[in-house]
Image (cartoon, rainbow, N blue to C red):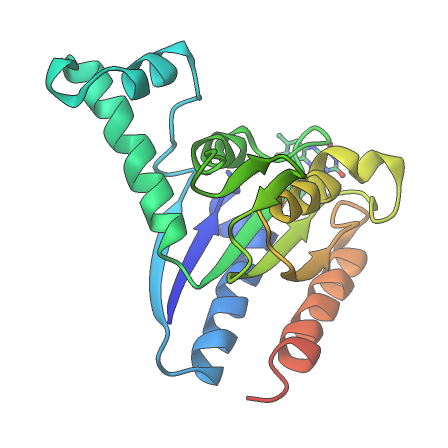
Length: 203
Ligand SMILES: Cc1cc2nc3c(=O)[nH]c(=O)nc-3n(C[C@H](O)[C@H](O)[C@H](O)COP(=O)(O)O)c2cc1C
């Protein structure tokens, strides 16, 4: 089984989502020895913004692309292929300014591809990624679950994943991390208990 592990926090060793996404992957590996992990660090190796240049590159025949267009097209193809080939995906997703990190949005823009991850039919949109298992690690300084303030972060990610057909979604949540050291420790410990318990208890 191929597992794509994605981090997007810019906070390096101080990142809660990096710590927890790593622990999810370790627990998953312990539960399934066949797992092969592919790691993508969107903060260290950022994907450029989806732009007019991206569209022009995609629409230009391969043998007519200049170097910049060839780079753009290759980046799109490789990012999409990596996602499509994954059976499982772990996404570290901190809240920044009520949304997801710009680096994570840039990745989403490369994998939201009509005909590959979703398609439109006469009956409406159809997601094509129903075979993937996804674990979302949702971290935030404040408390946003089931609040309007969570719309651009966790709720957006749920909408996007649902749109591309993902139904096997687990959310590991550690929020209120900025409310003080005790609150931070308790939120991280609760998330760790969730990873060891309901997520991988059968291991
Ligand atoms: C640039 C930036 C913007 C942030 N914006 C918000 C925000 O809008 N709401 C919130 O609750 N926390 C916000 N935070 C706090 C982070 O969500 C919190 O630090 C969380 O731990 C981030 O996950 P990480 O540690 O994996 O990076 C922000 C942090 C940074 C660095």
